[in-house]
Image 1 (tube, helix red, strand yellow):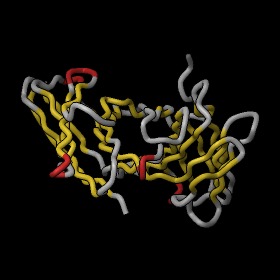
Image 2 (cartoon, chains in turn cyan, orange; image 1 turned 90 degrees about the vertical axis):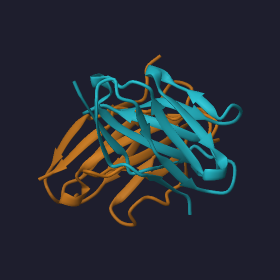
Image 3 (cartoon, one colour; image 1 turned 180 degrees about the vertical axis):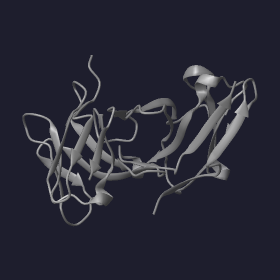
Length: 113
Length: 115
């Protein structure tokens, strides 16, 4: 069965620090990969997605992610975080190429001003 | 263009009552997904529906939970005889088709509290 694993459950950074959140998935076929962000009390918003093509994907708010097929990874990065990036981040993979998403357990990011 | 609309946003039910959560997909979207987020956990897939059809209900609890997406009107997630463990955020999402190459858009969620 497909699964998604996010390595860091809780990350605390100071403003301007660089961010990398790990995401690994288990599935040998074609995958579509997503990162969503959930601000406190709000719905999930799409940060970025990978379907095909350039494995380095740029998203909103300065986020990017790199798909490394050989490592089954899709890590999220941001060079310099802001206090407003405090939120929960979810990595997800589409199941068998369908719209059904399998989510990781999430990473809570706390950015200290 | 309105996004995915869910209501109610917050619902309080006593144990044993029924909860009905509604979801109107984005305009032009005919595929609806329901997810549940328990406290301190990630989102878990519950059910995937198209108009008048349940495509995948592998994440639905076997009892008390049902979902529908009628030809007209919103999708409804129904929980009968609620228990405290049903307290969670329930998110609806929609997409224009069932393939993985469409972005899935999420609603703002319905927070169910069972007292």
